[in-house]
Length: 325
Image 1 (cartoon, rainbow, N blue to C red):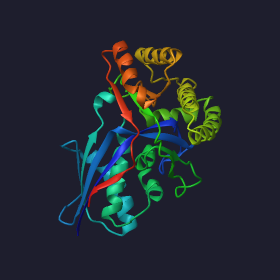
Image 2: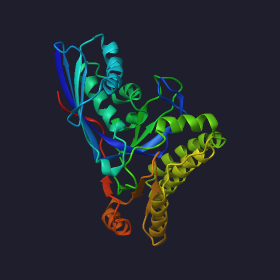
Image 3: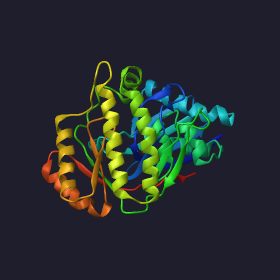
Image 4: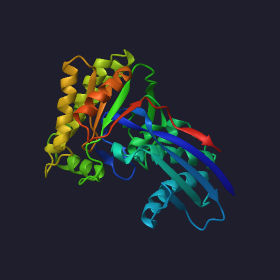
């Protein structure tokens, strides 16, 4: 048999953070999270199922990938092939439109796009929430890239109900600015950082309790389109996540001196009346939630303050889509 599909998915930024797994194999999170999908950064992935292939092939950004990298993709494809009752090898061709300069992880958009394409070529025809329980096994945050706007990844009680659901299409005046502080590979990977925090940080139980409260509060603020509250909760939640790392053994941090300078600049701009709020994932790069109508002015202020750092604007992104089949 031969079957082909091409899909496109955008990255997302968590406003209520996912930090810690309760099951490393099934990628079950310790807490529910909520994100905003971003239009500026995305992945396009083609999948060709072909009986004439001897084994899976994986091409990323025009480079044939190593056996180690291909094995990760094969393990993911097998989830779909097992469910569909097939063993046909696949050629996966993926292109990330996530500039290295942005310092943004592309795993969410990558596995969301790959999952969507596999859902098509295997004729499983799962809805997006069901599909999210599969893409979660590639990358937890990929669950949220299946939908546009504000998206919740529910922690659930088991593999079947730890899934993503849309919260709001965010079709209001919202944007996000990324200030790339350092785009080099992290010294502590997200996976390692999560594990260390969960197992050793005295602050972690308080974080879980706080994250649950923050989630309820931000969903209320989103429903009311209360941008200020969305921003304040986003900023607070992100800082609390980073605080848990300082309580780990040994303590660690993703921040760099420039990170703190950017945070200080955002606070300064807010003091001048601009609606802007910062958040950070597991890395030194700063994301700033703002009014999209203000984004170009804010970008100029930030670029003037940090001329050596890329400053990139994004509007709200849509959910995963099939480009060809």
